[in-house]
Amino acid sequence: MVKKKFILLLGFIAIINSCLSQDSIPGFIRISGKLPQLAYSTGEDRLGSAKMGYIDTNIVLRVLDTVKNLYKLQLSTSRYAFIEKIYTQPYADTILKPALAESWRVKGDDKVDSVSISLTGKVAYKSWMEINPAKIKIELYNVQCNTNWITQLKSAKAVKNVWYEQTESDVLQITIELIKQQHYGYSIGYNGRSLLLKIKRQPAVADIRKLTIAIDAGHGGTNTGASGVTSGILEKNYTLLFAKELQKILKQQKVKVLMVRNDDTTIDNKDRVLWAQQNNPDLFISFHLNSSGRSTARGVSTYYKHVAYRSFTQSLLNRLLQIKNLEEFGNVGSFNFTPIQPTEFPSSLVEVAFLSNTADEKMILDQKFRYKVAYQVYLGIKDWIKQWK
Ligand SMILES: [Zn+2]
Image 1 (tube, rainbow, N blue to C red):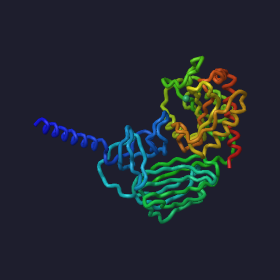
Image 2 (image 1 turned 180 degrees about the vertical axis):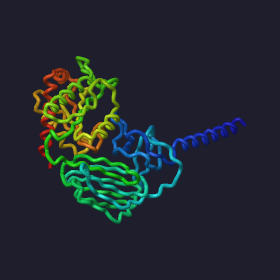
Image 3 (image 1 turned 30 degrees about the horizontal axis):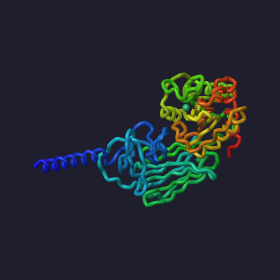
């Protein structure tokens, strides 16, 4: 009798458990929230899983699984991606039909070129930049091609050519070939049901005075960053000093400067991205100071996310390495750091030196060194502009 009751109880618990686990996975979600992004993996380190890119809101996707704070989403028959649950809203069960890609239009206005792809529904996408030759590529998921014409107008000044390839039965790959070889930035998102790309043009005159440069002093407010190994100085205060040195030099050179912060305020990294996307600078430079558990680690490093912007970070590093006693820590690519994720403008993270190394820390404390770093960054920007192709 007891045994029977026990088995019944176990069965009851199993039923409840299976209901609960089914409840925790919605059939479909709608993408929502501030700056949602898709990720390739569930990998967790201090920078989070490797990003596929930002994605627009109100796209409906099927949920395949749930892993901790992530949903595994089906993009197309054979593709999937992960998204943090905070970027989703449950969506009433439905059947997702593939969208059709219809006519396209390529044109320009007085500032940017645009490529508009008409679709019968909003679908997930991924975009990236290629170099040599310069191309922007887009993959549209759960899409079948019904594009019967692509109109290309002479007002387009940055785009050389566009074409598509249905690479899988429900994946459409789009190629936008550019005239200039140095990528200068683009945005991607929905305008109604059309996917709209806005492609920036390289300025006609290669002159630093024609640019607007955004300077980001890392950390700030309650986010203090690393601290000096002997002095205890805080990273947030010294990133601002480097940023202000560069601001002074650029202003003297009649360059338009935008500062992410001018004082000791807390700004979330996502808000830095949203701010930059709104203010639309030509270049974005983020100052940080490095730190390592290994006290011998030292030197300067520059970082990029997109290979299209590598040349910019190399120009900065080459000039910074001219500073006496500043060693090379390296040029680092595919860096999974939020402020340099946007495709909208070339960007570089500059980790000036290590607060955890006594020799580097001594330099950071020296105003002459901070000026020198800012001046070399200024020269690096000028070098990069000179090599535009
Ligand atoms: Zn930092």
